[in-house]
Image (cartoon, rainbow, N blue to C red; front, top):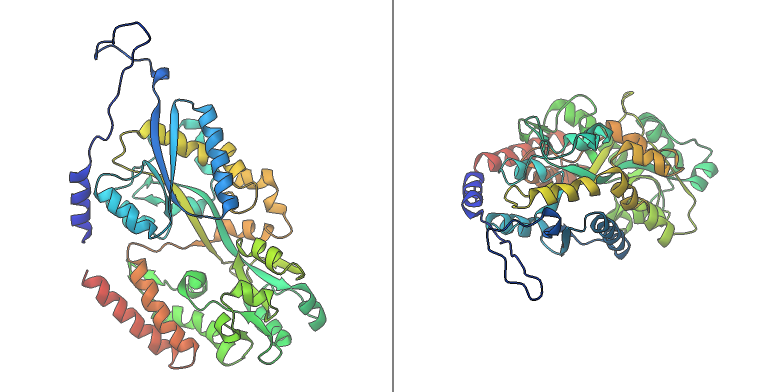
Length: 422
C-alpha cells in the first residue's frame, strides 16, 4: 500500500472508541446524563503495546507500570504484548482505527511511520519541567522530524569493543584505541583458523559508522548511496581484514550464531557488540574474563552505532492526556531509573545514567561514553530496501566473490530502482 493510501485510510478510520458512563449510588435515582462528573472520579483506560522481552524485563516493566498507576489511580494501563510481526500488527491496527494509545517504536521504523501522520507530536503535550535536554542528543534526534518531537527513547545500547583479557595478555598486546592498532593487534591474536583476532558483523546495521568514517554517506536524500567512493574506501579496510590479513572472520566461519557466541567460545579475541552481550557472556560463559572499551577511532574520529526504541502516541488516540502522563512517567527520571536499574537497557537520560553509575561502570562505561557521538540505526523511510540490498551485495564482496566497488554499485542501483518503483 502506498504511503498516500495508507494515510488516507488512517484518516478515514479514526473513530471514537469509548463512551462515558455515569453511575448511581444505592437508593438514589440515576443521575441525569448532563450532570457533571468530577474529574477525579473518572477512570481512563489506555493501552500500551510493545513486543515480547525476557521474563526479567517483563517483570521490571510491570513494576514500573504498577508504580505509575499508584501515582495515577485515575488511569488504568492495559499492557499488551505483540509477540510476532510487531510492526505489521501495529500498522494494521492503526489503519483500522484500533491502534494502541501508546506503543513502542524502533528508531529504524520511525521516519516512515512519522511521515504518515499516524504519530502524535509530543512537544505541546509534555510539561515544562520534563527536561528534554537531559536525553542523549542522537537518540532524541532519531524521533524528531520537521522541528517536532514524536517520541522519547526509553533506553538504548551502543556498540563497544569486547576483548579477552587473557588472550591480549598472552600475546603481549594492549587494548587497541585506533583502527590501525586494531588491525595490528588482530594479527598478533590470530592463531590460524582456530582463533581470530577480530570477530566481524558484515552487515549494514552494525557498520554504518564505519562506512561513513571517511566522510561519505551511506544513504543520501532517502536513497542508497553506498557506491560513493568514500564509502567504498571506508569499507575496504574492513573487508581486507578478512580477505587479505586473514585475521578477522564472521561467526558462520567458525560455526557460531553471532559474534557474542564466537567471542564466548574463544574463537575471537575481540568483537564489537552491544549491552545485550554482557549478561549473555556472564551467564553462558562465566569463566571468560573480558573487558570493554570504546570502539577504536578511525582516522582520529570516534564512532559507534546506537539502537533505541521510544514510546510514541497514536495520533488518533482519544485519550491523549492520559497517554501523555504515561509517556512522561515511563521516560521521566523516576520511571527510567526503575526501568534501567537492572542494566537490561541503558538510560537514555544522562542524569539517570550518572545516578545509577553506568557512566563509570567497568563494563558499561564504554557503552555510555559512546552515546553522544553514536550513529543511530535510522536512515530515512527506505531503510529496509537499502539494508537488504547492501547486505546482499556486501557479503559477496566479503567472501571474495567480487570486488567491493562492483558489489556496492550493483546493490545501490538495485535498491534505488526498487525505491523509484514504489
